[in-house]
Each structure stands twice: as structure tokens, then as C-alpha cells.
Image 1 (cartoon, rainbow, N blue to C red):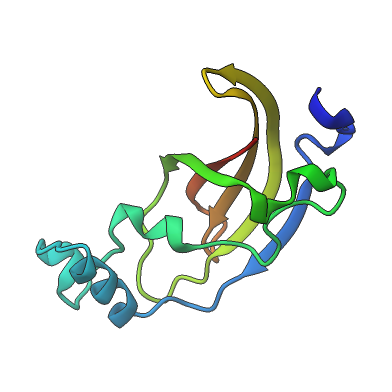
Image 2 (image 1 turned 120 degrees about the vertical axis):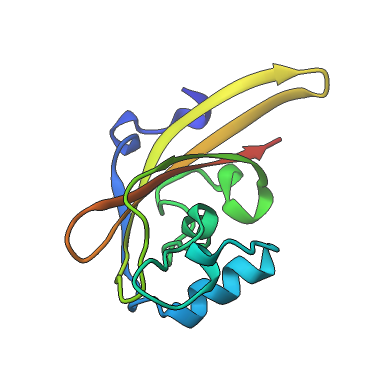
Length: 142
């Protein structure tokens, strides 16, 4: 494993954040900022739900686990993409809990040389324990 990372860190939870309940206004504002016009995302009422991409704005307080090598300090990394698995829709009043785990660390060699990727998994659940989304954030380090 690159940088002599303790294998026990993979899969370990390093942050839990409970976000306050989302409001209808927040959901509508987010959808409108994206240019979405569908009423299910932009009109108050019982059918209102968050646009599916709303989940990517949720995050924890700590960007990386504390015990990663200094070479993998998060400010030195570049966003290398996200994979999102959607669950139940976020609705007004939902309080979302975000659990952050170190999902993977791997190396690749490309035309520009060696790169190390850190994959952080954010698991989002509402106050009923229903899974809202799983977001894998990849960061690339050179």
C-alpha cells in the first residue's frame, strides 16, 4: 500500500456530523440554482424533495482521517470525481447524518507519473435511519 498506510485505516470511520433539518426553501433554492424547473423540486408542498445531487453538498467536519501520512494532506489533493449511489429522497425537515470513512487508497501511473488516490466514503442517512446516499469522493495526489 502506498505511503505505508496502516491497513486498519481502510474502512474506518473518522467523522460523524449531524446536520440540522433541511428546509423547503433550501431545497428550492438549490434546484433553481441548477436551473431545474420541475415542480417536484421547485414548488412547496407534500411532493417537494431535494434534487438528487443535493446530497453532494453534505459533508463532515474533518476532510481526511488524522493518521494519514503528511504527503496525503487533503489541501494538496485535487478532486478526481465522485460516485453517488442514491437512496430515499431528502425531504423538507429531514436531518441528515453524514458518516465519513476512509474507503480506499491506491496508486496509478499515468503519462505524467505516479498518482495516489484517496477515496472517502460519505454515508448519508435521515433521522429515520434510511439511507439517503453513499458518496465516494476521490482525491488525487502527485
